[in-house]
Length: 100
Image: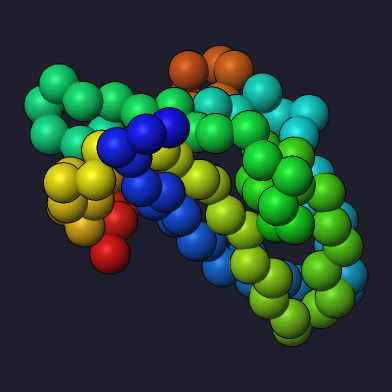
């Protein structure tokens, strides 16, 4: 959108188990939000990027890591470094992660 920039939030997904695992997030009913300040909440863009967590489905070999991303459109003058990503499942359980 005009007057906006992309905020690409990157996650490292590590397989610390002793066998290969398949990580499939597309069917987990997860929602993602970028919280900027008290009153600004951004929803992620739908993308066709490899590693988009909204559609993530990859096998990760034991001991290896992969990268996943969630992309948000934010106003050009917004500082996203103080934001928080909120990931919530269909049951209402949420996790808050500070953006760095």
